[in-house]
Figure 1 (tube, helix red, strand yellow):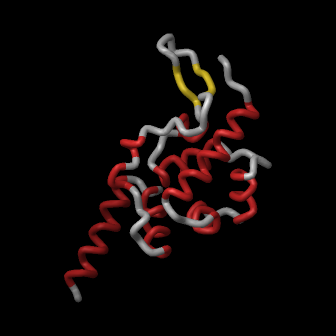
Figure 2 (tube, rainbow, N blue to C red):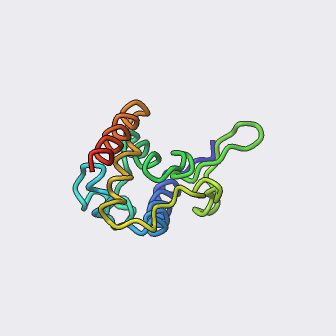
Length: 136
């Protein structure tokens, strides 16, 4: 394995900044959705610390990318893991219609929270929204 921890930390920081800017959200928005202190999230983007595995998983759900993409890790044809040479290794087709840049800050935060739910819980939220709209 050609995985260098400092390069992975840099990739995570670069990728979190890039994704957050693409989604046009603040560090505080992301930290609020994750339920963590804003300084903790800021430290991830500034390479002072690295998110836990569970935080990486939650971030991957929020931004609709894989944990490997967040870490900048690639697999060669033999299945060996390597660190990507550049942090811009995302497949642009991942973003497609999932961008939330046209929403206001509150709507973006709601979408990020919904993305963390299980499919069953997402259906419950959808039903609640439908019920609310029907009662208008």
